[in-house]
Length: 496
Image (cartoon, rainbow, N blue to C red; front, side, top):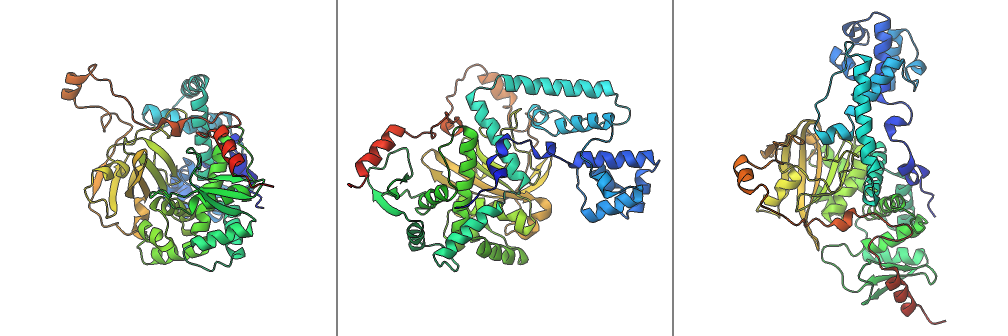
């Protein structure tokens, strides 16, 4: 059995990365304070470490984290030690206040309200900073105070996404488990066939049973007592028939217990989906393919999909696992419903997703000008859709495709910052858009003429699949009728 990293299991109760130990803001303020105490200008320090003043400014403002070799150079220039620079406490009460305000400005409350960034300088009084921080904390408190069960689910999503970002969405313990299982059945490379999946079931001591009366609310049912995995005889055209089997294996290998809350459910889902993708697209083979594609500057989600015979969404998910950890490419991923509602998202490339004041992106409406929305208006749905989008946080390139499901059409998008588009096929596209969201004038406010005519005269009924945003009641599985499952198992259990 695999022992899953406790950091993943407990991530939803842990502090966000910037609150657990040293962060770039604290490091930057410490460097700035030491520099000013020694009466050194920005230019003087920059010359001493052979860097441009703008680079030093970014380090001091917490926008860039220097490598260890650079930290040694800075420490020597300031007449201190690396250990002193790496102290986790703020260098002074004023610095602690500035760090708290800057962290608040980079957080979800300021983003959700569309507030402009306030530059904190020497002339900004402590009282002003304390007032800003107090207002921010009160808004955050009010949102938390109102929180009911759905908001708890959204908060759990926020915290899990922060953990995934901190680890670049790469979990070596699950990669190792996938490699061991593949090796145990003699898989040496290439797509994982149905026969290989069947061999895995035998290796794990389980038998596969295809039935016509699987409970409607389930994709598979595992009978742990009799070591059986039940699957539907009718396969969905939009789903990979291997995935539900591998997901059942993942649950067994990760030793999942019945989740007691939504946070546990989300953590288990990440482990299950990750391990499934790691089996379908083995790390060694996938990294080899992607490295070759990067060398040729033609990374493509379609090529990854076709090479391993998986869905586009699975290929896109898998790319996010390996892009940063193995290729050095920051990346973001989105799954967006045709209504414009964001269903799933991940980023470690500084793209700013729409969110509420708690930082939750699930259920938020994506800007109409983003690739994840414009792809729905493209007549040619066979060819990949590429687009550059200029946003307040930078220019991003994305590739997107439409996938169908019973709830409607979804776009699945993978994107990178402009500086990394050179590695991808489709970088030569002339498709370009500008997004100024969360500024309402970008796409959220209707033209004045339409507003005057229809304001107060419409009552739309939302089509968003709200079940995707519902919270998990304690001790149950979302959307599953437990009685129906138990009755099914009883009727199919072997006679002893």
